Each structure stands twice: as C-alpha cells, then as structure tokens.
Length: 418
Image (cartoon, rainbow, N blue to C red; front, side):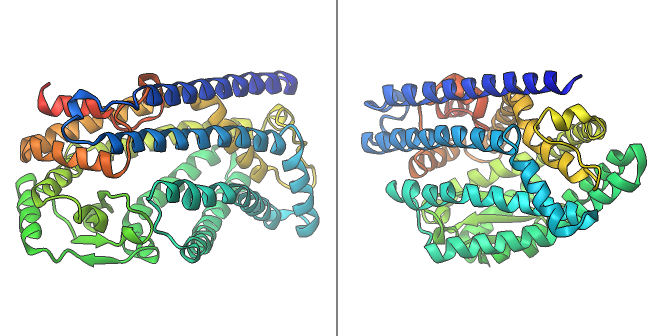
C-alpha cells in the first residue's frame, strides 16, 4: 500500500465514522425527547413524570456534550496527524533528549500530557456544570484536582516502566517482539486485577467494612448459596464525588472483594441489595469476567501482531502525516499512531461488544432471579434508573451501538415475564 492510498482510506473511514456517530447521537436525542412527555406504561406507577423528564434532559445533555467532543477529538486527531502536530512534538522531544530510549519515553509522556491537558476542560465541564446542573455532583474542586494529580503520578509510576519494557522488546526482541510484549501485557493486566483493590483504589476512596449485621448476614448467606468466597464486604465513600450509586466486586483469585457505594446502601432495602449483589455475583459464577479477559487477551494479540507489521511500513507513518526519523527509533511513534488510528477502523465493530455485554447482563439477571426474588431485583433496578437519571426510552439503534446494558423495558420485561 502507498502512503497516499492509506491516507485516503483513513480519511474515508474517519468521515464515515464521524457521520455515523452524529447520526446516532441525533437519533438518541430526538427519540428521548419525543418520549419525554409521558412515563412508559410499564413504569408509570413507579417513576414520577418529573423524574422521567429529568432523565430525558440529562440524557440529551450528555449526548450533546458527546457531539461536541466528537468534533473536538476529530480536530485533535487531524491536528496530530495530517496537520503535523505529532511530527512537531517528535522534533521538540528529539531536540531535548538527543534520541535513544529517553526520546521514546519522552515522546509518549509528552503526547499523554498534551492529550490529558486537552481533555481537562471537558472533564471539568462534565463534573462541575453538567453533573452539577442535574444534582449529581458532590465533588469539590480541590478533590477534582487532587484526583487528577494522583492519577497522573500513578499513571507515570505504572505506565512508564511498562512502556519501557514494550519499547525495549520492540527494539531488541526481533520480528516476534509483539508476541513477547503480549505476554508482558497480559501479565500486567492480571497483576493489576490483584493489586488494584488493595493498593490503588484506596488512594482515591475510603473503604470500610460493612457494619450492618442484618445485611451482612443476608449477603453471606447468598455467597454461601452460590459458592462465592470473598476477602471482605466493604462500603466505599462514593458520595464524596457523586450521588450515583453502584455495587461491584473487584480483584482476582484470593483478592476478590465486594464493594457497595454508600449512596446505594442509603437507597435500597436489604432484600434489594441482596438481589443487586446476586446479579454481580452472576457475572462471576457464569464466568463472564473470565470470558471478557480471554476475549481481551485474544483481541490484543491480534492488534499487537498487526502493529508488528505496521511499524515496519513507511506508508503507515507517512500516510498519517509523520516522517519516520533516521536519527532515532520510531517505535514510540508507531505506538502513538496505532493508538490514534485504531479506533477509527474498529468503531463499526462496537455493536458486537455491546451485544455480547447485554447478553451477559440478561444472564446475570436470570442468575439473580434464581437465587433471590426477581421482584426485588426489579424494584432495585427501578430505583437505580430513577436515582441515576437513566433514560427509560433510548433509541434502539443508538442503544445497540453504545449500551453495555439492555434498555430498561427489555431488561425488566425479561425479569417479570411480561
């Protein structure tokens, strides 16, 4: 392939994806607002018209912000590629470092910092304007920037050594570097599953043992029935950032722990909490987590193999607006360009991921209904839809592309048999 042909192919995909995403977003806003005036009959006795309208307005506001981000991110992508931004950044880092591994790590760090700085205004707007407007934000500006600093430092402490290993393999391990890098990456992901709950998550939130003895007894009985062993039941202070609620289990192997947002505990009855947890445990018992990890590892192997080929092709660099340097390795540049271009070519595959995820959600719901009362799960879900201002009337096509969970009507219809 020539660089001109690749540039044209990339441009065609970029325009097609941009058009499709705008069309889907427009459909979602139109569909949600069209059904804003009345609560769907299935939920009419459980959710107020005021809450339903709030969910519609919140959904539309998020999608509109997403449309702005689509345009902005597309312009940034073009700026980094065809308009020479990445080429310029490479030259500046090369001047400052004189090449070698320092240049490669410096280029990736500089790209990450520039990207984060460009995203920051939107993250701030989302938290302190959009979430604030709809009554969800509980985060202070001090906490926002503290989280930002912590995330940056942790990302550097963990990410830079991992990137160094990958870059070393790309330079020294020959044509099969991508296979060795895949083993390293898989090992890192598994290690993160073990270490995240106990070492990283507590840096951002406070986790305290569940003290409600009645709820603890109920949950321990559920875990015994389904054969789930956990390192503990914890409550997370999610309310210091948001009023959104959730429950999840994290970790891997002996490090598994169950976590409840304090906002969820304050809203749901004990039997509803049990049903929600049964759903989460269903993901584990039905091996959804393992299946997703295996799929992730399989797909990543294919992508790394593709990168192994592309990094040797001059047309890949030139076609994306970069001239490979003869004075320093191009491995870091290959990683960045691959990360920029891949989402453009894989967006059309997103519905496959969403369909698979929704299938798992239905299965976890069925597991919960088997081991608890289905009506308790329905009651809990309705409260969560209302509290989180989740729309009850998403556009079906938009939902197919984006939503990892089934629409409310379909999900509750399955549980009630209606």
